[in-house]
Length: 85
Image (cartoon, rainbow, N blue to C red):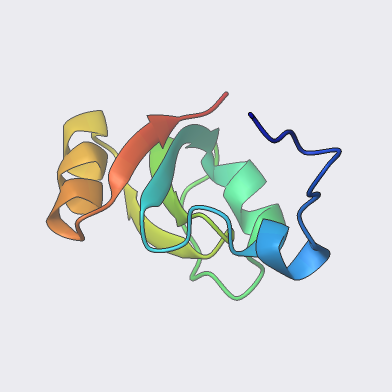
């Protein structure tokens, strides 16, 4: 018999850790958006298109101007890269 989420829902803690240590999310972002999300980030030029790599829990791992470098960074950390929009 196949279980579904209604029979065995994830707890908030389980959901928060889903994909941890396995998945990395890649997203192209504007430098202005990054500054808003990470106020502690050093000053960078406005209007730059950058690639951000995030852990499954949302922690930033890597910031680069090349998609290939973002992919390589995820794989170097033994994470499966997944693009998000």
